[in-house]
Amino acid sequence: MDDDLKGRMETLAIHAGHHRTHEGEHSEPLFLTSSYVFEDAEQAADRFAGRAEGNIYSRTSNPTVRIFEERLAILEGGERALATASGMAAILSVCMALLKAGDHVVVSQSVFGPSVALFQTLARFGVATSFVPLEDVQAWERACTDRTRLFFLETPSNPLCVLGDLVTLAGIAHRHGAKLVVDNTFCTPILQRPLALGADLVVHSATKYIDGQGRALGGAIVGTESVIVGEILPFVRTGGPVMSPFNAWIFLKGLETLSLRMKAHSETALSVASWLQTQPLVGEVFYPFLATHPQYALARAQQSAGGGVISFTLKDAHTRQAFAFVNACRLLSRTANLGDTKTTITHPATTTHGRLSPEARQAAGVGDGLIRLSIGLEDRDDLIADLETGLRAVAALEGAR
Image: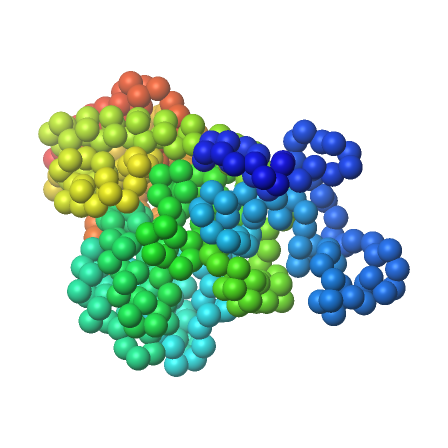
């Protein structure tokens, strides 16, 4: 790519970060190598000593991974990105690099179940965590202490699509000397750019929408050069939770179609969410771009579209009814992954949030009758027909009681 190339999101998602080699390749090259050969002993010594730039070992740098990092950083509006082995590895790397014993973190109650478990685990190493309601900005303020170092949230949240007011929370965090870390997996930079709204770091599970086809695990952290290179890279380089070159190549292919997919996911999801609201057996429907969403105005201010994730409750339902609904669907894939071209369905209380205590699930709003959909790229009417099959199964179960 021409170093001076400028363009809109769709163009940058295809071209950014690729500097052609002497081979003149059109597609991004895949460097499947663990190590690199030096011209002489002096060059090796200079690279190991940090006096010269260049590849040493693929745990510390790889050309294919670097293309992915450069491209994602540009899309997010950050100075630098760092690729990791998974989304959870990205969050862990941020915590291990920026926190120490005695520090305090404020975390949204509405985060992915394993994220909750990770912050609970940090207590073993002397890092305290306060979990607060995502939408209650005053709770974030009250939770701060003189030891608070990080705010961590995802917006929209998993699975209830609760939103965090990024501009306000960034202001609170910075007044208390803390960094705001935002998980942008659900929106991707196509729909939302947290750094432009005041966040200090963005993390991703590239496994989800960035890949888009459920093929590979990966994660990423985006922020300033000083934080990414000066603070987080030393941990990742030493600890080793790095992305494989092959997975980076897959994610580069995913980025090329990300804009098209996110717009299509969002359009169909809004249509399906609106249909769910009309169904007698459905209770609440959680989707940011529904006008009935309590944070609809904030969603329109922070996001360009609603994304592909919908959650809803079955009226007066418990696990048995939810299982009947999930089991009756035939087109939808029963899997806990999301962000796929194929629509997925899951029961959060027994899967993504199943390892949390009942109290933690209640605090996160994850009840037994909650179902989460990740809308794919299938035809809208085919998806609705499959959901109708699920509702008929629930009705039959109710009729048999």
